[in-house]
Amino acid sequence: ILNRAVYEPVKALYPTAHVSNYGSVIATADKTDNVMLDLNGHLYTNSELFGNCLAPVLYGYRGLENASLKDGTKLGVSPTKILKFQLYNARVCCRAPGDFPVTPWVSHRSWRGDSLYKYQNPNDYYQEFIYHLGLMGIEEIILWNPAPWMPKQKFDDWTRNEADDFAMDSALRVLNRRLAGQRPRLLTSGPIAWQDELVVTGAQVGPDRVLWRVTRPDWGLTVKAMPKGTIIPPNKFIGFWFESKPGEKVSFEVVK
Image (cartoon, rainbow, N blue to C red; front, side, top):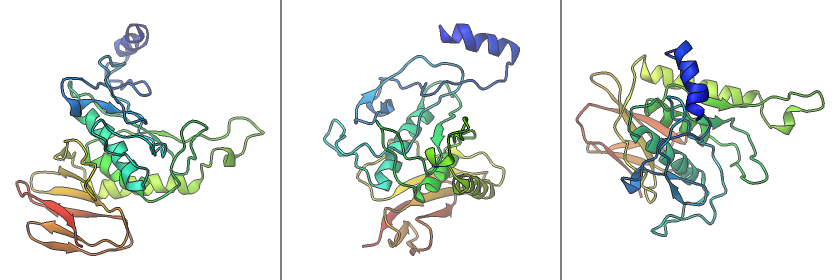
């Protein structure tokens, strides 16, 4: 009904317009790894899309303390686990049939959540999240970044500040430099491995370059890249970039 009432008239006037609705996705039930995951650890499906873009809500909620998957795996609320939760649903959308653009909803970095869903405290996993989304080929992000709309309201009511804008802007600038005008082709589209220590996304960028973003669960961890055994020591960032050649089988492991 919404498509007939809203999307089809818009498409008739603006054939190239991108149209989506908050939370509207395609999550098919033909495979257990191709369905969305809610805040309680429940898998759910949806087969009717509004518009022509998938619009998953990829906020960094920390209300997953007691949530677990069907196999008993605890989702957890560490920054790394929250990042995995976000990327799990992002990858489901990237695998969805129909080759629809993915235009996710992302909140500003310092949002505190609401009475029902608490958001994680501001941290640098926010920028990591943006890097992983960029490597997935996601070109448009819908940023929920509200400002006061009545005189009595203050910015503190929403916790948005200039640092939030800077965090997003700087992450996008880094992505643009790394991608160098090339559209990435996602290589790591499979389900997130909840038990892995590292969060890894890889994409082919141009004809002769594969770009990886690897996020650590702790600042001080040393990582080894295989098969060459390249050692990536701790640095001032929670994650790091790595490049390889197309066809090269690359994996990453924490050095104990």
